[in-house]
Length: 240
Ligand code: GLP
Image (cartoon, rainbow, N blue to C red; front, side):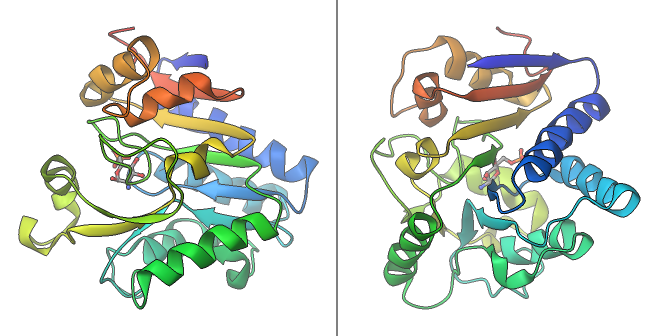
């Protein structure tokens, strides 16, 4: 794993956005893996700003998001589809039908299967963006998830429900299940960029980088990935 530590969040987000912008310029039909949560928000703002000011072209880009809550329509303000449309896609010239977020409505097992097939049919993910949960989850792959999983249905842990409750009216309204790319789906990405900042992430970053590779710390598998870069601020890197 390569590790880059930034003194402030602004330069961290600029660096991640630049990595994505350069990748899109180098391969106009690139397949991007994208993430939700607060971690990538300002990275997306930087990508939109660059598109508006410098015209970086996303018309040939295809995207796959990591995950979606089960039971939320794409129009629900807390669905990840809604988040992606409003935080990134609507600010770029990417046709929405080239953006894929797993649906949390319908026959979810069938949705998982079709999602994997679609990723394979476009040649796999070239560059995957990740955040990390305080318990080391990536996507919604909670501790204990098998390393060989592909897109599947998962139950959220209490820690994740509490962590994400701030985005909902109450803890009770946080969905309890999600569709998520599996660990193997993520590991198949050719290149990975993981963003983490703030002291709340420090222990997870320490365990991911220096701890044993174990399914109890899902992100630790990234030690085995050949091209992963961590973009950290000093607080998230404090225990390294
Ligand atoms: C959610 C998402 C993850 C994300 C995590 C951390 O659980 N499913 O993909 O990495 O939250 O969120 P945040 O970036 O807001 O800290």
